[in-house]
Length: 397
Ligand code: SF4
Image (cartoon, rainbow, N blue to C red):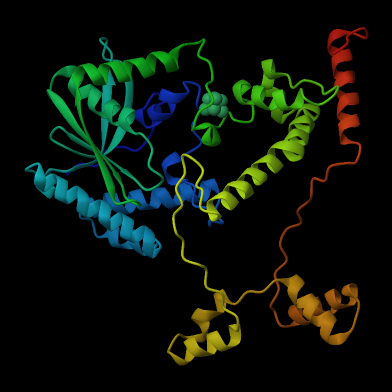
């Protein structure tokens, strides 16, 4: 059983589903891993890490390596169930196609060569046996047909297989999709995407991948939409969509972007979220969405009684310690109320008590980025000065 190298090629098939929508998309990580779970505290990076851990666990279990069980230990119960389902499904598919576990090629590199034997691209297919290619996904279902076509294209192109059978296993939904891919289709999809991606005049196309794209802050297509909002404001200085590469280094441009985001877009997003939830609550579901029941969260109302109960049931006190958390602010409020002192006195007293008990940790200082009352005027003035420097004193917007 072979394991292939994991590095990425800049034209590798893992980005093809995104390039099928926008040829300018630049990856920030594992799109598949991050999804729309609304109850998560994790960042995009956390989700990418979780997805990678699930993939590693799957790869080890499919190779029947002992380390697979170690990887499983680091996963939550739900993640573990998803991995075990995916692994079982792969073994079942192998058997259905007449293959044995020993025939599986896990994370095998596939490469497409040019006529002069230069590598056109390579990628890593999760599982391969015979003419069967399998991709394992742990996030929300997306259309991964192009990615699978990219893995099958080298073999189809050189004629070592007549057609390919491709599966995507969506572990969270316990669902699979299956396609038959012939040579013509793989060539049309594959070379079409490569041509679009390699076109020096390619244009960004807003799409379902924008939220994951490394260029989203500086993307002319996205900024054009935002600029349209800004243009509705009287005397609003335009965002220079022609050159957005300066967005992270120009404080005037960044100020305008933050102003628009805070004043309109962020609030609009929150309002849409609120209104659509209200609509669903009332029985009318917004088109394109589904209402999935979620269990109500359980609230521990008496922490001390809960911990005593678990300790009495045999859970060691040291194991319970890490879950015992309360906010500094809530302790200050309780102290104020109980001792009848001011907020400043309560803060000093609580801090002293906690420090002596070794029960407080000081986090690094952070900051707020508060909007000034005259932010719009300052931005107009700064933009006018910039324009004067650039175009000369007689320039008008
Ligand atoms: S942000 Fe721009 S470049 Fe990125 S995917 Fe969206 S449209 Fe394409």
